[in-house]
Length: 406
Image (cartoon, rainbow, N blue to C red; front, side, top):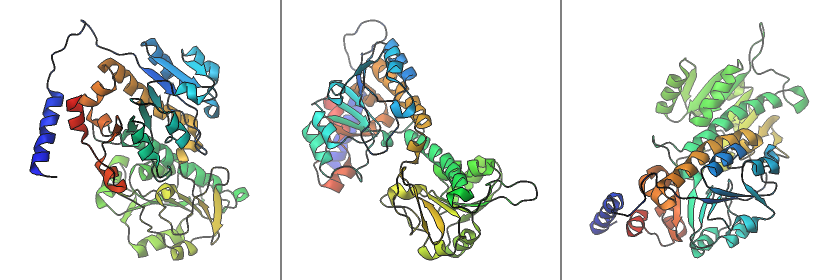
């Protein structure tokens, strides 16, 4: 970027945050939101972004909410739960998409993109690896504003929703492993924690981020013996500090990892890449040396997986065996426990929408909240993500400059 462009960008930032003279009524400046929640159509996506109790709070503050009939069926939220909360239940997605702001969990399908309108705001996941190749261009043509919830940050710079889903995935991965260790699932017939006089199961966790941390906590809570590997000594030290007790940790070295896996009853793949594919640190040869009936849960499979023998499975057909080792390789583990995941989502989306209304709308919010702004990748059809611009060779406009002109 040239020096003149940098100066222009800095000037735009300063202008965007300058106090503006405006005529306004005395008291809280707010704006009523018109929110639509369509039923998820993505394969095995059962989560909902807002629970009835969260919607009741929004409605009590003067906001209008449309939900599609059956939206919460997978998480045991009935249509009358939403009606009693003050939402209007409608029969089709087309009616929902009449709202000004659409909020959903999964990325929009091509059919949903066709229903979008100019100036409409969409909050959803941004998972371009599972979206149609021309989805981004079609959304640009629609001149919508789009926010990726998986890129929203909190005040500490943490990807707040990604962390919440990581906590769920870490905990759930150990529950899954404990289930498949039983003999009726093809496992060794072990109890994860053991009992007096019987050694506990050996658990190897590869990755010391959020997923790895909560997998470690869950395994230790059940009494298992845990070893954690990661490429970063900093993350290993942070994990030790957060746990408040000493456990076996090691940087990833092939010989050490192979030896640990040979002794393991459970292996959890919890590595997250900085960019692109998850590093494949466990070779086929390492897996072949593992115990027959041991269990691999590759949480990293949504980004390629960290076991060479892994391939994507589904919630309806979740496991396969390779070298006698049970592999569980389902992406989106959080959707296995959709009610818990939905409450985690609503704890973030609910306050976000309330703040948006209190601040006077979406534009006013992103002018002041850098964390939300970090998730914006389309603004009135203009691509505002430099990374996506380079990846798809599409024109890019700086969001600060666009907001300064608003």
